[in-house]
Image (cartoon, rainbow, N blue to C red; front, top):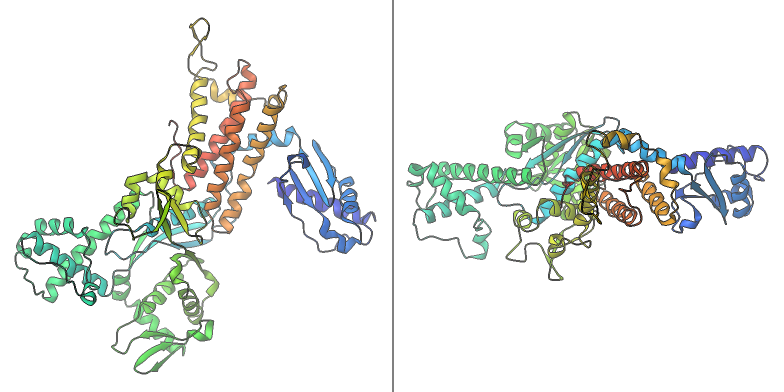
Length: 584
């Protein structure tokens, strides 16, 4: 990575200059740190290093320090200058050519790294109740989580993706009761959901259970005919199990359609049946972490940073949601995962401290748990933002996908940091204009592919209308690109072409440090921002540089650069699980 290389070179120059006494009081072993940045003004070079912080050691003015250090730097094919306390580096063609060649050689592996060092990560996200369709918020977690999984794998982590099915508790019985009403309606009974505000909370009156009721009657006609307004426990269990299975099946189908693939669906019910919840409670009790108060069983979570103790078992003998969650996270650690990453909604903010407390209380490192808290999604329609769920239309993830497509939905869901409220502009996401971020990026890739197709397609002489042989034959194009003389990019008498090529290549070089930073910060949205910038640089290069020129050697060099761009765009979109189309 060029920035790190420049920092290393500058650091060595500082130490050498200090040894030679050219930096006044600064010593070679003084503890200093440097940062490299890309100057906003292109006249100041490609990379700049600020050495002003050395003034406190050297007791010299920053401009004098910069000049002394610059004089000690020796890099071939690089122009070095100073401005105030900055050392500016303008890279020569050998540096730029190497970047393109590296991408050509590494292809889809370009940008990958081993930062994760094989660390075993379990990434849990979405984890919805199987009681209804996914809402738009679930879509954000699905897109963000699957993109993060791809990113972490690309950065050397061993990632396991898990969906925790919240299928225990009263909500599943409520789902069964709701299906019961829909089944009776399907059989012609005059029955409807309660209208009382309190009773309504025990039902799911959405129309999505109507097709489920039709399937139930079709598959269990004899059983359905035995149903009356009053349900037996066995009948309720049958209805609940059927409804849960169907809803989970529908959720899995939509996740698959949305390019979101889990390694495991972990059932909360199975967690209880396995005895792991009770075992976990017993272990906490043995460790002296529980006490009884007012008929309830409490966890001493305040000993580990929580703002208060928490109830694990209520006075009626039933467990709280926290109890199973503690057992679930303990089970994750017992399964051998080094890092537990969860994506939760922002309303779970207070839950983080108690989960970390439970991990520490059970003798594990609470830092193994990492929680990303996601903000809500606002739907923007006709320029007005509406919180999800407030509109009668477009309230489910499936509605949104059907309206704007998988690619646009995924890209827009990832485009902002997860801790920022997202405004999803429906009309813009559907548009085929440069203002639509996903269209802008996908069009850049399609344009690159179009250039390759045209390079090996018969042409027409504009004046004579006669057919002309392709610039490259099918079997020679790849070799011509791989063997291209990249020095030709800089030999043309066209300043705008050279400037746009430089800018494009330097943007390509940013991909490697970007991936590292995005992985460290768990921030897939950084890839979207980078793609917008890279696409802009490519469109500018295309404007100022005729790629398929009659000079085949120059054409091959420019095609190599175009190939590098298409490779990085395709890799980036692949990490987001968004298609890189060859035609648009």
